Image (tube, rainbow, N blue to C red):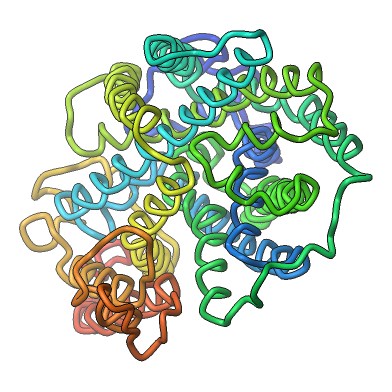
Length: 500
């Protein structure tokens, strides 16, 4: 009997489109696993045709690259979507979210610290989306002859926060359906944008000074962090409704194609648009990236308004993924709230942070600083999480993952898997040591890149940014070595307990 024949003929009551999903981080029974790999692809593709990636491409080229150089970075950086594909393979087996599964690697208590980092990360990405939503609304207002002041901006933020909470409150099945609906309209929208801009594109545009190899490393870190790496900690939040024996190749292939291909195309479009607008990098790097569309003389006013209106709807959809993941992560922290209640709480927190960001911060500075922060924990975590799963021969005990007390086989030492947590800390230290960022951190934390901020004295890496690679390599190697004694002494034990 095929997988499709064994799937429920209708979505279960616990996860029906346009009804509030009742599951949180609890185990999804086999009888309620209604999704297929292509459903996962539809959701990710709908989220990936996103104006954020157009802006990322423009900002990346604004680092000081030519278009061919930017395109090369985009292609290489988006290979990191394979990380999301691989980090979506545990959900069908565990039947729970990423930070439900992460209890195996770090222990029920040890995983909570990493869940806290992820919760803050999701709030940050939510705020990024809200900033763009408000930016689009500001451009629409200006086209209507209204220049919004601070009270209007506050009202825009409150309205945006209220609207964006709708999809994640309803939950998984609703998001899958709505995001799938958005694919074709947004392909058409971005194709129209490309056609209108085509005669003004200048792929021969060159920066004033050639890009150094150090700048190449910074650009690659930016591209990797804002593509697959930044989503790797969310993969299983959406794959857990797939049956346990869903095709591994199908999951990896569908997720990669549905994410990498749209993002490559849209980031390339953003780079082309920057060349069309001209050398006005400051427009894209300002407080509102949508001003770049507003200032483009080749885009008619009606199209700019239409583009902003439609992309606002899409930004609400992509933010629904951030809010959904932040809600289930909050549950993984042990907060006693229903999933939809956690979403509402996160929305209020996002409201406060967005008001601060919109009223006092430059978008590009916020984005680059935020990326620098999140990769410090995500890079080593991703390496340890995937390595731990592989060392366990790709096997979890779903019911044991639901236990958060000493009866769990994943309890380890006082609820903490010390080899994994130690490797995480070593990986974070390694990541920081090779990080070159715009935000200020003590010199001694990144000696490989910068020795002294005050006089721009560079360390052994001459200002290059190898943070992601060093963080992942050190974390993986440390975990492999530190867990060796436990693996060696437990070879005769069940697979699930081999590392604890």
